[in-house]
Image 1 (cartoon, rainbow, N blue to C red):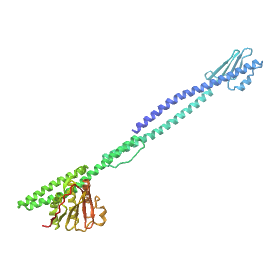
Image 2 (image 1 turned 45 degrees about the vertical axis):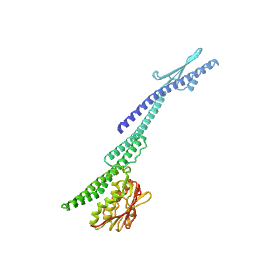
Image 3 (image 1 turned 90 degrees about the vertical axis):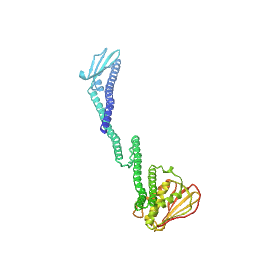
Image 4 (image 1 turned 90 degrees about the horizontal axis):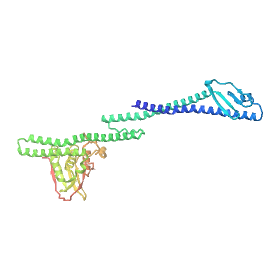
Length: 423
């Protein structure tokens, strides 16, 4: 492309120089010839006037004086009453320029050799050619610079587009000072940002899915193990089978929540839910795991509360906090619900050592963990609560106490206490 562009620009420059230079050369030649003819005609007129003046004063015409006044001229004077006068050397016929001056009494003819005129014409033509060559050199330089300025950005944009196609979605932020190319670069940068966001969202979805699905699958596995262990006891099998079905439904809900979060659609999903139902379901689900660790979960506070949230989202948040307490906490886990005029608060605390000092301010950051975990649970939990219009905060580091703040939709409160403990 660069070679074609350079050739086209040079061709245009050559045509422009020829279209201007050739007529200019013709005009220069004509002007020099016309100027020489006018000068010779003026000299002939001056000779005619001087001869007539001399005749009117009855003075002789001095040929030597004419030769001194008009050197390198061949002068012929023919007047009535005097002998013809010839001054100078007649130039060759093929290099002769002749002009006449006439009056009633006679004629004066002047001739000159055109060799000097030809030298002047050649000098002017050489100057014109030199200017044309200089113009071509400048045109070549401009063509090279312009072709580089146009083709190099295009090559750069092609590399950027190829890089985007290979998955490298970093915006280049290159600008070239050419409005059209800058617009293309801006579009590619915006596309790179969108692709980067999509790739990041896909990676986050894969990571979040692997983390969030692990807990329901673990619970489902425990239920199935209970069924296998109590195969000879139909009542227990039935109870554990029903619990396994609930686990499977929760697993489906988790998948839906993750998909909605990946599509950024969770803001429109919040609706009034029964907080007690979610908490009791989570206590029932996690109770076997805590009993195996010789620990218990207790639910205290106000009952009959309804909040604006999603059942699946709140279930995942509570499950994350319980899982976090099971692996990093100790003692009894307390879930306390309180209600204010506009919000409902769910606090989850245990009797463990609490959150380490070095990560207290970064506990909700991605990949930050106080143990051997992935550091994703609290990050995802906070995002799920935020998607429902609430907040998740660490209100006390020792012992660790997390609070879920949700929007309130009712104030029907009735206090009672539910306690689970080791079997």
